[in-house]
Image 1 (cartoon, rainbow, N blue to C red):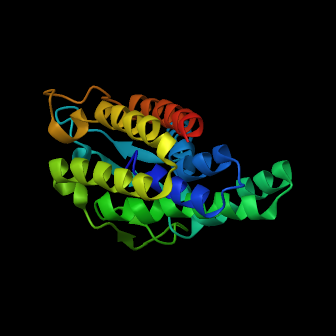
Image 2 (image 1 turned 30 degrees about the vertical axis):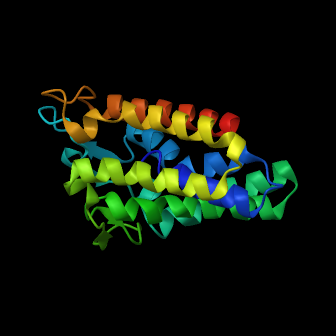
Length: 211
């Protein structure tokens, strides 16, 4: 999931309207900001099928630090505490942590059963409801989910910027769900990690400015 994570940001910002947007936007993206760094460092591992551009063909071999239910959310307490200190607000630190936790919950819907539960090594249970097995349905469902939440939470003057910007970002990911190319343009783990990182930085900037 990509743009759908910012539906969670929309909910949190609406629930606490006095909160600054950027730490919440960073929070919902946090696991996918950490993941590329760990892949490049060789601490987490992914296999890219060069002959298949679809998202479902990417195999997340190991990502306990960024995407496990328990371990990654324990580690997220550190940046959450930093946010709380920087903004002098315990509430904002909690919101950052909740935003990051929502990432795992939403990923659970789309991922194949590869999301670790504990993340402490050894034999671990992995979960995922597998919506990515149906790529076109997954693509349409994610944007409908995002748009519905935005329409329920955003102020009307923000509708155009948030919905159109979200659609543009979502369409950038269309090849991963419709297979327009005969191969994966991000054919190595490093390339996939870098485009993921850049994509989320762009999405954070867009959401912060548009909201």
